[in-house]
Length: 270
Length: 263
Image 1 (tube, each protein chain N blue to C red):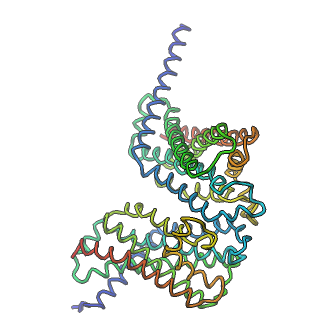
Image 2: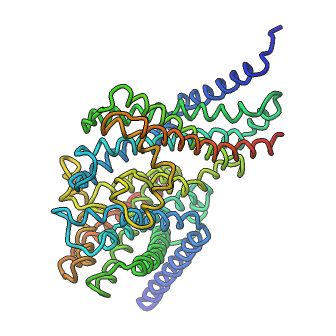
Image 3: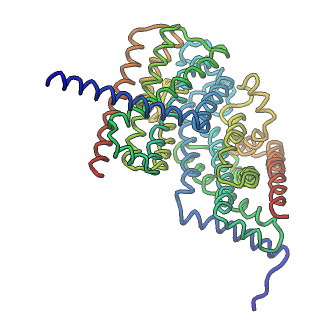
């Protein structure tokens, strides 16, 4: 009897993993088939980086500006995280589309693992984030940017990007599950944009003033970007690596938990 | 039996009706105007907040960053207003109302001037809102006095008309609201690759060359002069020419596309 139960458990786990893999693959295929979804997320951060590098070069000499070889180095982490953040909301938008067109209900009537519904979407976001990371980093390096901490720093930057994609994807899934509307999920885009802008992403908080400086300093995006930036412009530091990964992992865990509760709540309401 | 107005009077009536129809649309669905209101004010707050430190660099031109960024935020507001107004034509095409408009007798020109008029009316909202926010929140200086404000409004309204023409070219060509997505990149390029955030002297390499030949640069100089000092003809006429160029460059193709749809 015990053996049979163990086999059943293994089989159940294996089926759940298969379902997660299938739903993840579906999510990735959807993303790749929709260039209008990921191209703006690549083009706009690159354009912003190109413009800011050419217009803020004189700002590097201001007292309070960190010592950096070029503005391109300074803005590298922000551009990558901006690109990843913009794409991550697609997880929620696609989930909302599934709800709107009835695919979500059909999934629920099948014996599919509930966790795989969320995981599938988040893996899709993470894969898209990884691809964007590789493309953007290659372009930045091509134009002369450098990562002072070398390969370990690049790995940390990539892990942070993936975790951030999962964290923001989690929030967008909550919105999708609560509202069931693509429009509502897409409306969160300005929120992501403003959260990123009112932070140390594009300029050091030391050079800001008043209430804006306070908000930027308390913005969790600054807490993530600052250690990542130090890895890029100063060099390797275990503290910075652990801080950046720890913060984004915590954020990811919180938003996934929230999304799980939102899914349970939606299932109860059906 | 009511006599029908013909000729220019009839055209003016159609333009007014279409422009007012757009404004009524805003009143019925205020969500349409929200991006036009929120985004420029957000840009004003974000740009002045993030980049306030650059006023410490010698040669920036002002010690109050609001004096520099307010016209830029207004420019972005009127860009949204112009392109958004063209979106009304896209909606009408998708809904079939535009086909009925094209069946009506008379010149086609009012059908194009109507949305442009709507764009200019709609642009009044972000111009006023950003200006008031800049004065209240950042103490923006109006060194150019009433004349500076008049030049700011007229220049910004002309710019809204230019960007409405750009939106109409896209809509008339692709006959869908999705056309507006396609022009995001040129709009981004026109507004960002200019003296929006820093003076020309601060820019290096390719950006400086692009900014120098971008028509938005003289427009911004015209709009900004009233914040930095007195209004002068030398800083006004290049802006007027640039607005004219925008309207011609985008307006003529829009007109030709409209004529192709309904000769």
